[in-house]
View: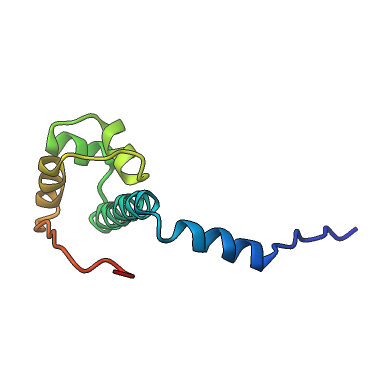
Length: 104
């Protein structure tokens, strides 16, 4: 027996998205989550490339493995100093910049 796929009414979705896409609170939350997940992905990729465990990273930056895990899963918002320490473990420089927000 085939399962029926739920249909999404694209007009409703578009209407909902149009309402929130210009909401400053939504934009701020979205940008924060996007940055957290981009860093999480980069952290995981670099760690895997160097065949290091989360525990290895944690030890080098003086934190618990659980902190590295939460950062790698995009769940924890980190201090700038922590991000700089993590970058240095990989012999990398943390680069932060500003760019024009979309739609402004």
